[in-house]
Image (tube, rainbow, N blue to C red; front, side, top):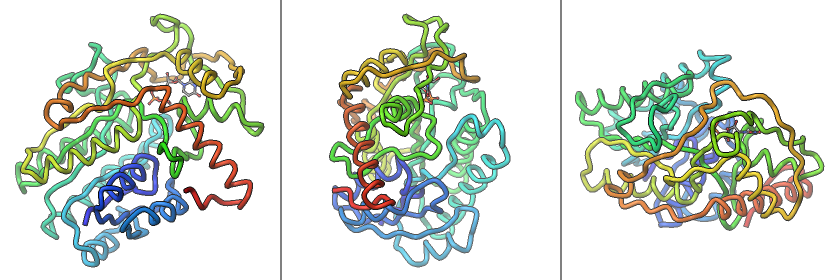
Amino acid sequence: MILVTGGAGYIGSHSALALLERGQEVVVFDNLSTGHLETIETLKKFGNLEFFKGDLLNREELKHLFERFSIDSVIHFAAFSQVGESVQNPQKYYLNNVCGTINLLNTMLEYGVKKIVFSSTAATYGEPIQIPIDENHPQQPINPYGQTKLIIEKIMDDYDKAYGLKSVRLRYFNVAGADSKCRIGEWHEPETHLIPNILKSTFSSGEVFKIFGTDYETKDGTCVRDYINIEDLAEAHILALEYLKSGGKTDFFNLGTNTGNTVKEVFSICEKVTGRKIAAEQRPRRIGDPAVLVADNTKAKNILGWNPHKTLEESITSAYGWENMLRKELEQNNICMERI
Ligand code: UDP
């Protein structure tokens, strides 16, 4: 059985769904602090999924989990992930992300589980010194969130040397879109990400979309990011697990598309997909946003055999489908349930 921590969240749930659709047995461990029980209920319809509500900071709960289920490998998503909040409240991030992961790794060792795929981030690179960013780029995070992920990567190296625990660290660039059948999608409260914020502004309850920074040294003055589709990203986790199961060594890979789009380009694709003229306000730069972040994904292609193929327009189309679906369900039922 594969343990997916944080499987009720955005990336964890899409990866769990990809595993289920390949006939894998999955146990999700999640404290539901940011994830949703409704997402778990939906996932259960698509395969053999068990849910264990628990917290990584609670060693007893972790032990019960490993006692109860026959776990052979782990994909670890559970973490806080808001950059701004991590600057305001670093102790929350160091405690949850770092200490929680240490508890997980120690419990894995106690139960003889030695394979883990870890949800890392391009934020471990910090301010880029060259574009595109490959895996040899220096890792100098500029916020506590990125620091927590880098510390965990280093812990994993030490745990390999000392205990033979094999890890694959996947460094995500900007993850975008939803399940193409709209069964699950991005559901953050509060939402800080670009695409859902543009799309949300088209609904009557939405706020006017704000562009953070129009004076960057880029082709139209707005930030450039590398948007990787969530289903392509989920696929990389499956491949990473297969890589470890076939004896692969501890390694780390960028997950991106090798191409960048500006905020204004994303905005105009959103207008095309929604068929609406969307209002936008120009605002000052958001603190800590580098001008350009684009991945070099050659290593993941060569070693994992990963081949992302969905376009940004496909990501935005699925995200919009999901936003519509979520609203309809919330309106009909007051909470979100059926998503088939
Ligand atoms: N952004 C924006 N308005 C928003 C949210 C994001 O202009 O409401 C910009 C943000 O400044 C950055 C880009 O969109 O340049 C991507 O931001 P996001 O938070 O989606 O991802 P990040 O790159 O911070 O991981």
